[in-house]
Length: 168
View 1: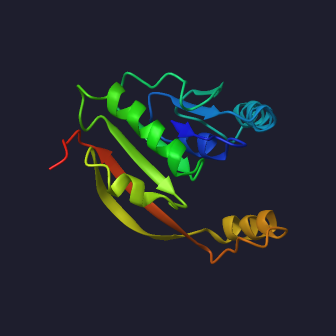
View 2 (view 1 turned 135 degrees about the horizontal axis):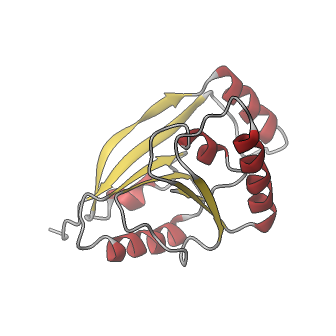
View 3 (view 1 turned 180 degrees about the vertical axis):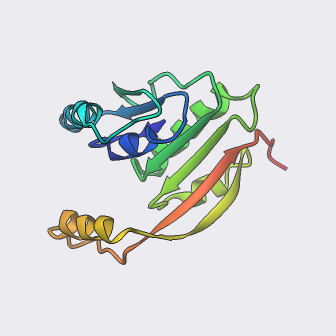
């Protein structure tokens, strides 16, 4: 599950792995339309060979249905801390009877501290992951007009597991 699927790149990448399904959630209608077009192009490509079906929900992540099956969620910093807290509360409620059935790969993890302070989630990994040269080039081009951001060629990544632990 890609929360804040944007233009769909993570969905396409995930579909190349043997997941049961790959689901994206995107609130922005313009980005959702681009993602749907990218999915169609990808699925028609003779070189794609996806292993998992892809679907996209144009929806609010705070309202979209969460999977009933074990889930690996991906987020590239889709929202700020207040919305992240609300999303995590939904995850906790939905998976309350299934601890360890939800893992979160959080890239550009600006609010990893929100998860660290939430006792229901356990940090499994934290570190800088190098971008491919192609990704770094695309990243530089995308943020060239934004003064508040830069690109080092690395992304801060964290992985958390919902363990359902009560506060101490």
